[in-house]
Image (tube, rainbow, N blue to C red; front, side, top):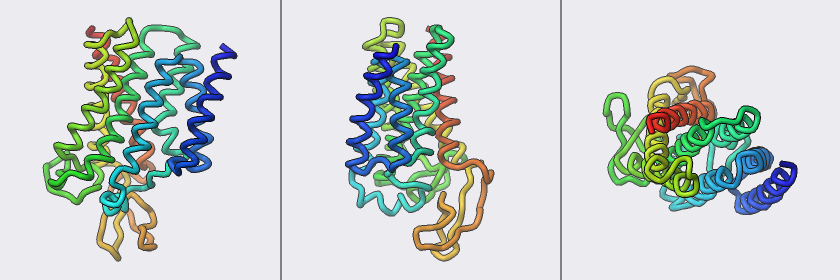
Length: 265
């Protein structure tokens, strides 16, 4: 196992160095990513590392895709595309813990649970990065009301579709290389877990996530200080439930849905 950990550390270091160079990670995000990558790849195995890499590489590339067109929507988000330790842990920390648990308490539940978690974070990231480019305005998931692009809880056909594709990709890769899952089950686990977790993320965003309001710009935002420099005021939601925690809770839901689908099969 020591050799696996060492190899995972070296490989993760190379990926993190590239991400730091491209500006996809902050310094704290790089340290967190190194920990997550080493534990996931070193303890979970190469398939787990591949799934994590697919999420990380695809999300980093999509964050730079048509960046200028997404700039207006990005002002609503709590953080930018340069991921810090909180974002890294919110998206990859649970997967790393599952990898640790799979070594401490070996069993068949860990792989589908991990697939569901990675499918969710991939699906949600794809939906955020590409859904904001939709020509039609999003609608709030709770009541269908039209909202501005980037509003927490807003969903669109494009965002939902790419969310499904992102989760499906994770499931297909897992099914192709895991005889314990197989392609049909892997596809359902990834698509079902990823889409469920992503929609749950939107539900939390529309209801209980802490959202602020900038009186100067008259806009909702996840930021305590708007980009214009104005200190925002709480508008709705629980004060302790920020976007990072929403992402982590949603990945838990996606993982549990994936585990339920796996149990059926």
